[in-house]
Amino acid sequence: MKRTQQFALSVAIAALCGTAVAKNSPEDYSNPTWKEKYPEQYASWASTSESTDKGDILADNPNAVILFGGYGFAKDYNKPRGHQFAITDLTRSLRTGGPMDNSQGPMAASCWGCKTPDMIRMYDEVGEATFSDKKWGAWGHEMSNSIGCADCHDAETGKPTPARPFAMRAFVAAGEKFEDQEENIQAAMTCAQCHVEYYFDGTDHKKVKFPWDGGQNPDAMLAYYDALNFKDWTHKISKAPMLKAQHPEWETWKPSVHAEMDVTCIDCHMPEVEANGKTFTRHNVGNAIGNFDVTCSGCHDSKAELIETLHDNKVAVKEAQSAAEAVITKAHFDAGEAWKAGATDAEMKAALYDIRHAQWRWDYAIASHGIHAHNPSLAIEQLELAKKTGEQARAKLKTILAKHGVSKVTYPDYSTKAKAQVLVGLDKAKLDAQKKKFLEERVQKEWPNKVEY
Ligand code: HEC
Ligand code: HEC
Ligand code: HEC
Ligand code: HEC
View 1 (cartoon, rainbow, N blue to C red):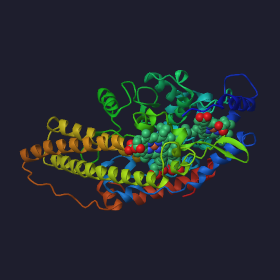
View 2 (view 1 turned 120 degrees about the horizontal axis):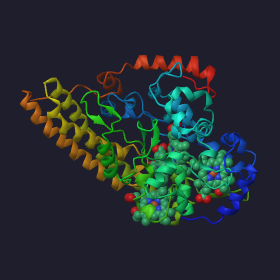
View 3 (view 1 turned 90 degrees about the vertical axis):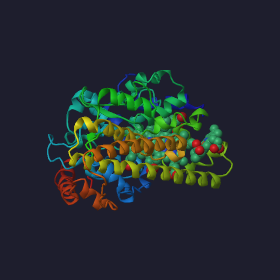
View 4 (view 1 turned 135 degrees about the vertical axis):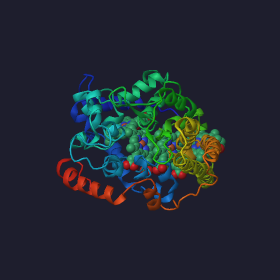
């Protein structure tokens, strides 16, 4: 849907900056700078702190620990919550570990990629390459603003504009140059700078890159990664060269019924509302069904029916997800047994590629948390294909196992998160202790965002 008042309002934002010079000033990256001038937008943005539920995906689904064996997501993996928590959750996550000095990993600086406008300030200051060459922990002392105004607004023009240069490059690579888009798509591209599939490009300073050169659908992105021989990690049990799909909200929304009708992320998650006689964009990106009256009711008759549809879609996606992951999890164990029985690299290659491909599709479908609302049919299609590809892997592994004298694989007990973590070689107590030390002795003392254990 398209809005009409944008230009007048844009001029209003431009006044904030008071200069016609192109670059944002360092103060623009600080969220409080915008507060006085835009109280409604600011207050609604700040209220994302009310969405606190983060769940525990691994406890709910211990299969995922096995699937991510050898990778950070087996350590901990939560649901997304309000934008205000982006820095806190990243700093607290076991995935970022406990780097006590600037040279320690495990993560690269590009992990700040979708959390804070302070990263863009540092890009301005030291350059994207110099920033990205360092480790994640090396920049913590600079990161104080959670996802905010300067992430999505050019302070000079006021227009919604993605701040991330890597996103702008990706739009060009995909044939969708930002400057050539309609205004409502440009507005949604502020979401697309983060809510997409990405990787860190080892051939270019570990900068963030979206794998869109050949297209944005799951086949094209998989072909892109295969052609590069790229892997995010080697699986702990199966030794398969794995890919982690991130959160392709943009890519899964694009071929959806809503995209076709010009309904974007902004319409559903950030609608225009009226309060105290003012019309403004409610900036509390979160629960879209709460916007039923302002957005959905234009096309959907009943809120209750829509909630039921969402629920039914969720159940259907979950069923397809469980069916696929049951197969892929077993494939990892089958492969592990095949290695133990003496299988060779050459024998295993095709089966391991099937596992890689199966899990990519599974992850593509479910790493995008709102998929049951955004594009349930795409999710189910990919999950069915994931299951089928996983079955092909298992059939190949059965032959390999038989050749090496194994007629039956016995699967261990991976019914809880704790049991599964032991199976993939994680020492949770050690990781927790490391994190506690890091938060207490480094973050709380030296970093602006005093994250508690
Ligand atoms: C995640 C992206 C995003 C963030 C963060 C964001 N905005 Fe916006 N903002 C938008 C988009 C998109 C629009 C335009 C909506 C449209 O017209 O389609 C907008 C519109 C506006 C407008 C125009 C008037 C209106 O209400 O529509 C103002 C003013 C504004 N934002 C201020 C702010 C301030 C202040 C902050 C920080 C507290 C902020 N924005 C944070 C994306 C964002
Ligand atoms: C700078 C990167 C960035 C931008 C820009 C961004 N997001 Fe997010 N978004 C995130 C991250 C990171 C999280 C998870 C935060 C957490 O859980 O700590 C998140 C969480 C969310 C959630 C879950 C919120 C909840 O309360 O459960 C929704 C919905 C969402 N984003 C929608 C959007 C929409 C719509 C836009 C565009 C208007 C947008 N985001 C722009 C990075 C971004
Ligand atoms: C037609 C409306 C609609 C559009 C368009 C839409 N969303 Fe959503 N989105 C929803 C609904 C509804 C949910 C929540 C489903 C539920 O809770 O059952 C959701 C969920 C999400 C979530 C997960 C929130 C969570 O806490 O799990 C994220 C992230 C998200 N959307 C981001 C986006 C982005 C980014 C776009 C644009 C690329 C987008 N959405 C487009 C309606 C929409
Ligand atoms: C411009 C019209 C329009 C708006 C606005 C709109 N929808 Fe839809 N939506 C459709 C159409 C058309 C369909 C497909 C036919 C159907 O299932 O009713 C659809 C289907 C859906 C589905 C089923 C998805 C699927 O692919 O099976 C969900 C869920 C949904 N909408 C949620 C929402 C939510 C939540 C909002 C508001 C935040 C919203 N829609 C706003 C037009 C719209």
